[in-house]
Image (tube, rainbow, N blue to C red; front, side, top):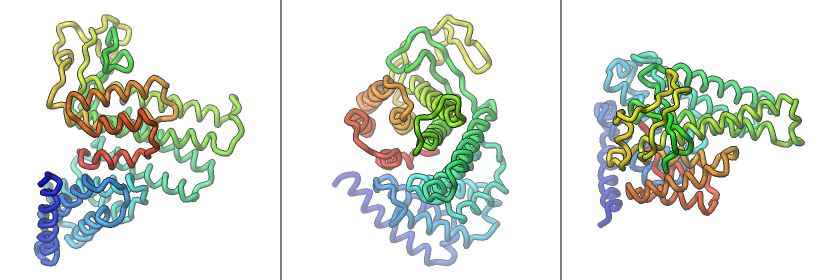
Length: 372
């Protein structure tokens, strides 16, 4: 019996037990019941590769939200329950974004209650998720034709400014170092890479980057849609140029997160011109970064989390022609070193030019399971 078949058997058992618990007025309100539902939801997201907010993709989270509404306000006073509810709100948000659905009023209300009791309201990941909600809602309004073109473009620009403000206002503990190198290794797209205090911080930054990248792709489309070639002295041309520069900046920064987790073999640069508060030149005796030259088994999950941002970067319409082949090589390296089958699959998608939306690839990867 395969692992997947065994998992399906255990899923069916767990589903039956959880259904019984929901029928019990006391058990239905326990944290353990909601946690069980979150695990059932996790199983569905990993095994069901179609991002459709219907059937089991929606049922578990909708059921958990119903139970939360039965539990009363006291649940927000317990730290353990609060962390669980934050996890639920994140799962709901991801499902809405991945399935191109409107963020529900119930989710907004849940997050409002969490925020009222959240000990660190300045947490960058929480602030980032608030902006992702704005992005999902704005994207839906644009799709439904609710906003006139000019208002849609203005709203997209305003939201991008909010993401930019967040990136300039993260606490020191969430900031990263930029390390200049003299020569590119196989895993350097440019002559620098980023070093993060922790992997979940790298993930937060790459989520911000891929969201800004998608946002600015929409800005470019609105500048070009149904129009003659843009005149260089027009406002639309300036906006288009800004969006293109932002896309290039986001793709470059996503690529700069690769060497830390895939390894690099280049010598440190002796240049000092870039030695600012946010940029560090490695010295020859600094082994903290140079020691990652060999593949590290502990980097397997961080590498997996790089697959989706790299795919988004490679598929960008404004990306340099050299980027896609470089991304393919990184994915093939992951597949060879870490036996990551999905890295090879995404590399083939890029090589063949197969038409897959970003969120099709996201769900194919089971990326839902790897969000902190």
